Length: 68
Image (cartoon, rainbow, N blue to C red; front, side, top):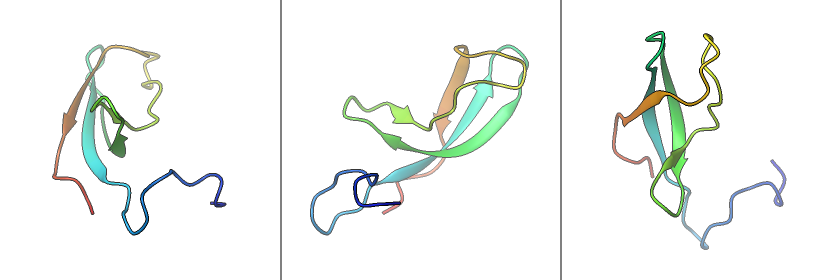
Protein backbone atom coordinates (compact mmCIF):
# COMPACT_ATOMS: atom_id res chain seq x y z
CA UNK A 1 0.00 0.00 0.00
CA UNK A 2 1.20 3.48 -0.70
CA UNK A 3 1.02 6.19 1.91
CA UNK A 4 -2.02 7.74 0.21
CA UNK A 5 -3.95 4.42 0.32
CA UNK A 6 -3.39 3.68 4.01
CA UNK A 7 -6.19 4.55 6.44
CA UNK A 8 -5.62 7.78 8.32
CA UNK A 9 -4.67 7.29 11.96
CA UNK A 10 -3.01 9.12 14.80
CA UNK A 11 0.75 8.92 15.17
CA UNK A 12 1.72 5.61 16.79
CA UNK A 13 -1.76 4.08 16.75
CA UNK A 14 -2.98 1.17 14.65
CA UNK A 15 -6.30 0.65 12.94
CA UNK A 16 -8.23 -1.88 15.04
CA UNK A 17 -9.66 -4.82 13.14
CA UNK A 18 -12.21 -7.32 14.32
CA UNK A 19 -13.00 -10.82 13.11
CA UNK A 20 -16.66 -11.15 12.12
CA UNK A 21 -19.00 -13.93 11.06
CA UNK A 22 -21.30 -13.04 8.18
CA UNK A 23 -24.22 -15.39 7.60
CA UNK A 24 -26.53 -15.16 4.59
CA UNK A 25 -30.13 -15.19 5.77
CA UNK A 26 -31.29 -16.63 2.42
CA UNK A 27 -29.06 -19.66 1.81
CA UNK A 28 -27.25 -20.03 5.16
CA UNK A 29 -23.69 -19.67 3.76
CA UNK A 30 -21.19 -18.46 6.39
CA UNK A 31 -18.14 -16.24 5.82
CA UNK A 32 -15.44 -15.33 8.37
CA UNK A 33 -13.73 -12.00 7.62
CA UNK A 34 -11.87 -9.19 9.31
CA UNK A 35 -13.30 -5.70 9.32
CA UNK A 36 -12.86 -2.24 10.78
CA UNK A 37 -15.39 -0.19 12.71
CA UNK A 38 -16.42 3.07 11.07
CA UNK A 39 -17.20 6.27 12.98
CA UNK A 40 -20.81 5.19 13.57
CA UNK A 41 -19.68 1.88 15.13
CA UNK A 42 -20.65 -0.43 12.25
CA UNK A 43 -18.13 -3.01 11.04
CA UNK A 44 -17.00 -2.60 7.43
CA UNK A 45 -15.49 -5.67 5.76
CA UNK A 46 -15.86 -4.90 2.08
CA UNK A 47 -18.14 -7.93 1.73
CA UNK A 48 -20.62 -7.29 -1.09
CA UNK A 49 -22.50 -10.41 -2.19
CA UNK A 50 -23.12 -14.03 -1.21
CA UNK A 51 -22.64 -16.83 -3.73
CA UNK A 52 -26.46 -17.09 -3.96
CA UNK A 53 -26.69 -13.48 -5.21
CA UNK A 54 -27.96 -11.94 -1.95
CA UNK A 55 -26.60 -8.41 -1.45
CA UNK A 56 -28.50 -7.12 1.60
CA UNK A 57 -29.89 -9.81 3.94
CA UNK A 58 -27.02 -10.81 6.27
CA UNK A 59 -26.38 -11.29 9.97
CA UNK A 60 -22.99 -9.89 11.02
CA UNK A 61 -21.63 -11.04 14.40
CA UNK A 62 -18.28 -9.98 15.95
CA UNK A 63 -16.22 -13.05 16.94
CA UNK A 64 -13.34 -11.68 19.01
CA UNK A 65 -12.13 -8.49 20.67
CA UNK A 66 -10.44 -5.89 18.50
CA UNK A 67 -6.88 -6.66 17.38
CA UNK A 68 -4.38 -4.00 18.41
